[in-house]
Image (cartoon, rainbow, N blue to C red; front, side, top):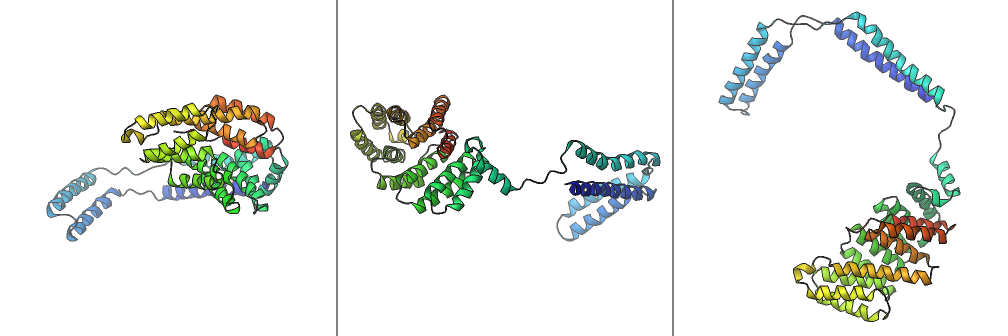
Length: 361
């Protein structure tokens, strides 16, 4: 490090010396000839050249020559004022330029740590892995999970955790790649397809998309009971104009929900509102659909009260509150889940990533 700072100081001094040297040469070559006359003479030549090449017309040529000639005559009649300098002012400038790098180096040697070697990324990564993952910032956690995924290339869970960590680090593209790689390793897992569909919906600001719909369809192939996938696919049909098909799917979903399921009233309201809307209004997400989502989230929260040992459910609940923009409930649920699963770094990472999910627009 000392060698680096010495080299930097020498380069700074050399640069300052070069600037001062060129300034001294310019001062020594000061003359009495006014360069303005040469500029206007060259301008007249360029005007003629442009006219000869047909780039300006004769009228423009005459006007431009008249203006340039007027300026040339004015400059010729004026008394040239050559640039002058005071040699006595050069010494303090030279002293300041020489002292600046010396003082900078001395200050660093005084308050810095010149003997401290550079902390390599490999060493920092080993420190992060040895530390409590709950305390790591998102970027560091993502770096750790990248190494874990590299060490376990055939483990879909490693890539799933990597996707969550990349999402927490706001690296959306890397998160999507990791999640798709996890699906490649375990295409039969419905939870991976459902997570992909939810992430695509969130990425699209809450609007459905063909890619998200495809992910939900794949989730339903593997888990026909996925209420979230069924709801989003029906919502997509309603919003795309197929109100009859979406209503049929919602009606079937309503029939499958238990009588005491807290999501039933919201789903019923969504169905009523969709039936009463005109096609033009149906293109926008009705309030009942939002109520349906809130009802589904409420049902999940009620289930976790009686079945709290479900880390995936807690992660979904935290993410749902984040998507709905209910920050108070999100933070309270996150704190409760973190306390319940204290010491389980992987679950803690998922909870943190879910809490950072962008709210639905």
